[in-house]
Length: 219
Image (cartoon, rainbow, N blue to C red; front, side, top):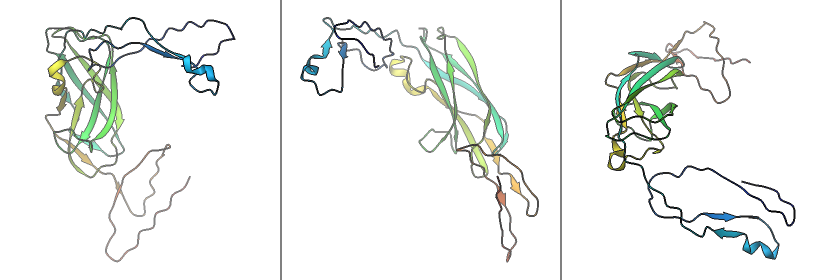
């Protein structure tokens, strides 16, 4: 953060931040002022707290995606709605807030090639044994070849909930496939659509042998 103070004045700053899980050491707080300056006295602007900041992890929760509901069919460029249920199957509550991510995948295993459809935030924690239902509504299917796909949901995508040894079971693929079709452009028939910045559209066109296809785009 950047602040301005007059010469000889005192500046009191309070900042609240979230520390990711994965470390239970005792770090010290470090405050640095005037990071960029050519003045010689700038060398004394960093100060560590006198006492270490003790960080204690809460008892581990265990978030799992119980079920995913998807439509049986979808069309590229058209919206679909996906819903899912997440359960905390640990004996401890899940504290804080986190986000669930939804992906379009060719199989039932998440990898880097899967397309992110969207994220949904959850707040208010989750009691031990409790569940919640989340929904990603009216999300457009991105350009994809026609065929069968799975929807994969990864709960707590940024590892904001302490789950200890149970971090690896947060993802689940839909039990039933999603059959995706590509919309067809008919030669000689005008198709009207709108594109926002960064948007894509995919269409299927069949051209007879020996014919030439000419596409005209207008704005």
